Image (tube, rainbow, N blue to C red; front, side, top):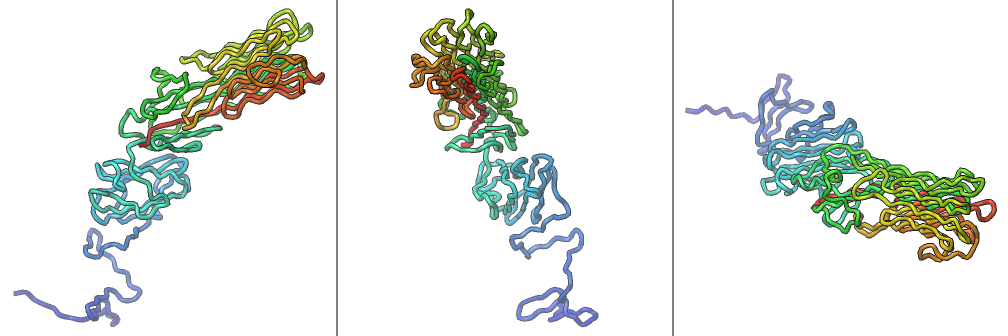
Length: 476
């Protein structure tokens, strides 16, 4: 026989109701009381309100396993890490929040338990939070959707089986993500692809171009070294210098930081300067891939000014136009040597008039043109690639500057009487109009145009164009 106790209210010693039943509503605790479960006890039937208990006294700085019903502040200042979700059960809830606005530099990865899903994505796939100040709340629904993001400033975050990374200026095609670095930075990979082949990335690394040479008819600056590799998994129309599948050129990324260096262009030579060689460009790098700076254009070249030939580099600088007895030689390209070649030689010069034509700087796709007694050498052509999604030309050599304001023949298809630049390079100084040598194209690695003694005070040679680093990989 069971016993039954029937009461409407239970009061404490002070006469306050601590359990009170009124019209089927049961109130537990008097005003100001705290209701607590004993250590080790569990509750059922109460449910949750869609909120979590924030763990303000336990800031996370390294990988940990979350508990349902808790929210965590995650500080990635010291480096990227991950949150391992608990085994999913209907109604389980977990929240995370960027503690120091560092998710943009060191991402937080959300990793489900086993083969569970996030937002209906791939089984076992992770989500990367890479926006500064981002927060995310996940509720487990069922095996079909898994953990669903219910509060997030990017509701489209879904588990992916491809690379997740930050750095540079990011653009997307329907199937690929592209990171463009126009200055130094860091390519940060927070999660790698499930399929190992998808961790190989396409890239373009272009160094800074050399500047044109000065005095008389300065040689054109050589283009910055050009190195490209296109993987089969991230297709596009590459340049003829695609280095795939050569083993030293292939880059397979892992979850880590990759420092990026973008080389600046060489500095042009002031007009009338007697130290006449152009300045070399600087190297650009991405992990094991280094592109050499373009060689400066040659200068000098008469009885009082010794001949300074074009300088070797990614592409060589052109030789200066010479009114002496010895021709100014162009600098060697592809220095140091790599396969495919990162650039071409600069063009040489003539020793006879009326033009005493000097050489154009070498380009990625063509040797700089050698000047003649009737022609100023144009810069060697660059090459075109669609790694960014649009066809753009990079690493053209600079054109030779004019010695005198003669109506000299065109140096390569342009209208000015001077050596025209290759695609991405600058044209030489058009002495007939007194203009300075053109600069190489910024972030294309072009060589600068040569300077000139004309008019009498001389005109400057052009600066080399800065380089660029572009990384492309599959996301769909």
